[in-house]
Length: 131
Image (cartoon, rainbow, N blue to C red; front, side, top):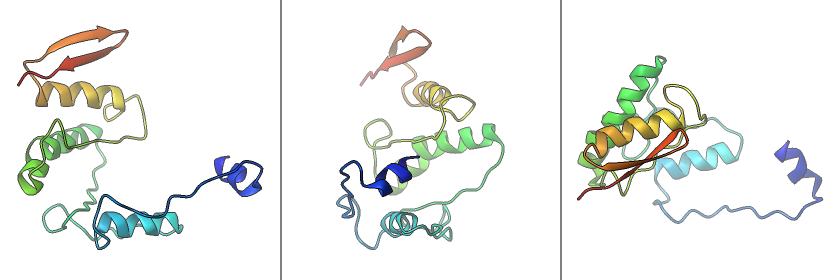
């Protein structure tokens, strides 16, 4: 639907095509351009040997959840020096389910900030970092 609206030229649109956060040689950048051009990303990068782009193929949601937790808690901070709470962002295309935003947020909060005080608003919890 959005593609049709953009292609109709009824509404003004702006295209962002310059990337500022990663180096031009970054596989993140290379694959972003490939996707923007309607191509499949290069999926040759593996967790162990890629500089900055990983393709990890898992089918069971519980294993996916554990891998995401491990990446955020151990692997990414160790490899890139990022802080688990301040420097890593996890994106998911769904809200419900084992790897949906609600459960991912809750599970990541339990693992990364276990002693925090929490507030409950409706069905969501918000944890305050304890440092």
